[in-house]
Length: 273
Ligand SMILES: Cc1cc2nc3c(=O)[nH]c(=O)nc-3n(C[C@H](O)[C@H](O)[C@H](O)COP(=O)(O)OP(=O)(O)OC[C@H]3O[C@@H](n4cnc5c(N)ncnc54)[C@H](O)[C@@H]3O)c2cc1C
Image (tube, rainbow, N blue to C red):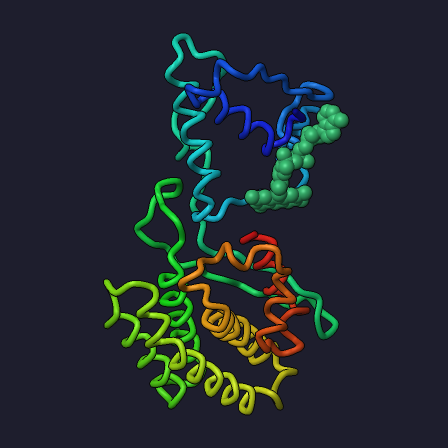
């Protein structure tokens, strides 16, 4: 195997699994001394110990498999006495939690900032399970509602989003099928009406960066909700959409032309896989 994270993870989990450890003899091939492939990084002593790597590396909190692997691997190293290498005592030393992320887009003759404040939750990276479609639905609706409130206050669109969110909360505890059935049309209808309304308001002000950003983000989130419902992802699971290109998926569910080619959709696809 090569020395990238894909093969190193595979090598690690094979050696962890009792029934596989004895069966396989693993060799990692690496040109030079540094493992890690595209995720390798090091310091250049000749240039003030600057960090040199392929580029920025961030892990979103929901990279459950990645966090599970690094946590377990660090624990495994630290359990060996004496330790074979010097490394972090705990995975928490290796990561710095961060909520504010800003993307940059060249638009209108200058760099436009797209700051995102990722909300934190109580979860611990590496301890979560499968991402529940219902949770995604609730988060998207809540986020849309906040955005709408900031831009327009408590107008009609806000009330529609509120009622969809209330309905979703009311169904807590019911299976995905029930949620899909009851909420399906409500969400699709509310979203369509909502997107039509904000398009009518925003379309003549798209030269204004803040309005354009607001519309694009809302169109993105709203289209995701419509797509989740239309494709039955609540009951079939997100895996059933594997194999379809993300931007094509958005376009198929009616995203405005600006959305698939503007900044957040590709960025979101790249980060979230
Ligand atoms: C600029 C940049 C930023 C990124 N940012 C993030 C991020 O923020 N968060 C995130 O989660 N991911 C990020 N990624 C993606 C992540 O780094 C990669 O997905 C991951 O490192 C890929 O691992 P891999 O093992 O599949 O492949 P690679 O890392 O490419 O590993 C393949 C290895 O195989 C070796 N190899 C190839 N052929 C042979 C051969 N014939 N013999 C021996 N060895 C061979 C290569 O030299 C390499 O070491 C980023 C990637 C880049 C480039």
